[in-house]
Amino acid sequence: MNRIIYPLFILIVACFCSCGAPREMAYVSDAERDSAQQILSTYSNSIHAGDQLYIYVYSQTPVSAVPFNQETHVVAVEQSRLNRVGNSNQAYRMSETYKRKEGRQVEGYLVDQEGYINFPVIGKLKVDGITYDSLQNKIQVLLINGEYVLDPVVTVSPMNFRVSVVGEVRRPRELHITGERLTIFEALAMCGDITQYGLRDNVVVMREKNGMVTPIEIDLTKKTMFDSEVYYLQQNDIVYVQPTMKRRRQADSRRTYQESVGPYASIGVSLAHFVWRIYRRYVIDRRGLFH
Picture 1 (cartoon, rainbow, N blue to C red):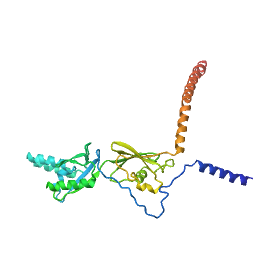
Picture 2: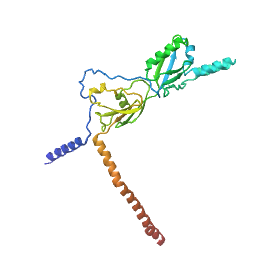
Picture 3: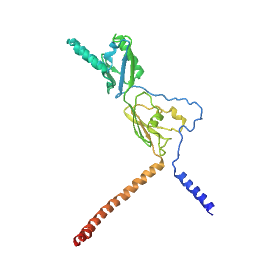
Picture 4: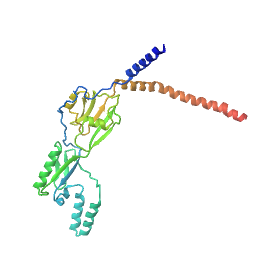
């Protein structure tokens, strides 16, 4: 009899466990294995108001590029002032001190609300809406035409590319990216991936467009996600991984339990504390007096 009951008991337990476990969903489950999938979506590296830009000008004659780099142009301006007042020795000492300094902090160029940056010598530049490559070419042309630098090589990159990932991921947090491109898969991987209680087929990306936040859904289980406009994330995007229905029910039942039991628990603790004080006053303390 035990030979029949024991296996039957194990089977019943296994069935209950499998029914209670959350359903796992694979990424890109409808794509054929060992087959190439074309990515039709494109990432935007346009510059917008509020962006912090790093700009560096390189030249084979480094002296000519000094005023245009934040790492050196402050020192160069002060050296020029000291040379004009005839204090060349102090200017030389400043130069030597700077050479020994390592890890000098660069603040970058903040794009103001009107879409401009204030670049050394050249002045205000309209950068809103153009790409990093376009700004590099624009600065190079201005430097050559103004005969400031004859052979400039300009590098422009973002300094404050950040994306927030919240919801059912293992480590919800704000990501600070040093490059120009970030896919939604890379962002999720940096947060420890989606938990077993997160919906992979209905992830929401909240993106700011023309001063308004627009929620955009993406299904990570289908190959059509490669065509989505949010496959490549942009500056200030918020990725929200929604919880499964089971997770929501658990949260609702926990909240209902706390709301229903909480007041009674508080009353019970207060009552127990009152009884303890009465017992201590009229039983324990009096026994101590009798002794």
